[in-house]
Image (tube, rainbow, N blue to C red; front, side):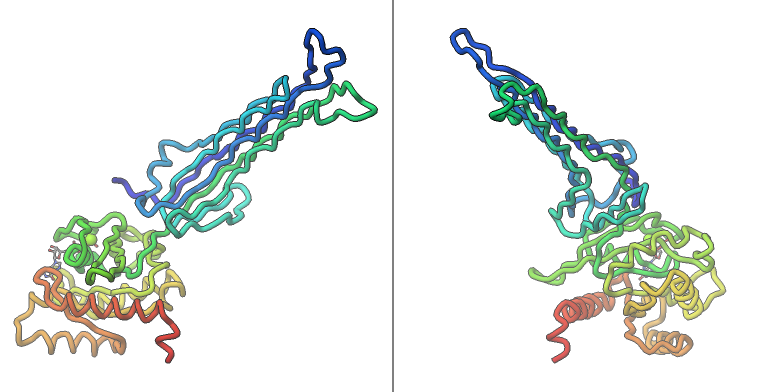
Length: 344
Ligand SMILES: Nc1nc2c(ncn2[C@@H]2O[C@H](COP(=O)(O)OP(=O)(O)OP(=O)(O)O)[C@@H](O)[C@H]2O)c(=O)[nH]1
Ligand SMILES: [Mg+2]
């Protein structure tokens, strides 16, 4: 499945049906009077958020959505049928704006959340409506109003609790594979991951959280190097960042601490929305170190970085430290979601 996080679509609501001019003509009914019915309302276009979708790719191939127009009224005071609405399913996390004016129309974050994006035209009135004591044979009716039409800009920003951050090859995809059912590709070359992946991490029967794996960052990403910063926005709605660092990098002159600093520097360039987030250091691939050196080596990295926040040492491959990490992440998220409990 292709990942696309931006799209433009055209939405056109249905026009209202026209009112009818009609007169009752029956054999033994003289002066039958007006009997033109109203038109039906035009259908509207709605967006509905779905948690089962996670890409806007479908809108590449299908970009115009129309609701039905209302039927015209007819004689015998028959009202036209209302036009059917058009429902468009979009992934949860889709922000909607008017492409021409830039006006923000909504942010669909919850399953089933609905947004009216083009209102159907109001129905026209039939001539029966214009009957009065002074005008018994009105010949007027009104046409239906046109439905709203606009071009929308959709932007998907994934919804996850925790985001993974790090250089290419740090083991981000390996970690999400180890702790969730997500199956992104893992390989020993940089930029294996080309688009974000989400995984649900189940801590026990009752508790779970969503983790996002994004492509690796390298120095100069802000200037467009590698895959650039385009995917960092997908971490903007997370509550916690896990910064993965390879403790035994192969084929690079950077020390693990230096590599971590480079990623942090790119984060700075992206902006406050990410630098203000809590970030934990996760030292990965400890299986590559001799058992007796692990502690000391990790300590050195932390020292070199001058890191004072939480630190975890794990092996995504062998499973060391994963349980502890996951439990701590869960506890942190729960505390965040219950701010009153945390204060007391
Ligand atoms: N020895 C060891 N190797 C690991 C560990 N975690 C990941 N690797 C290896 O490191 C390489 C890169 O892992 P990925 O999970 O693809 O790394 P990534 O951070 O997702 O990389 P990009 O998608 O390119 O940004 C693969 O060859 C993995 O098998 C670990 O804990 N121990
Ligand atoms: Mg990857």
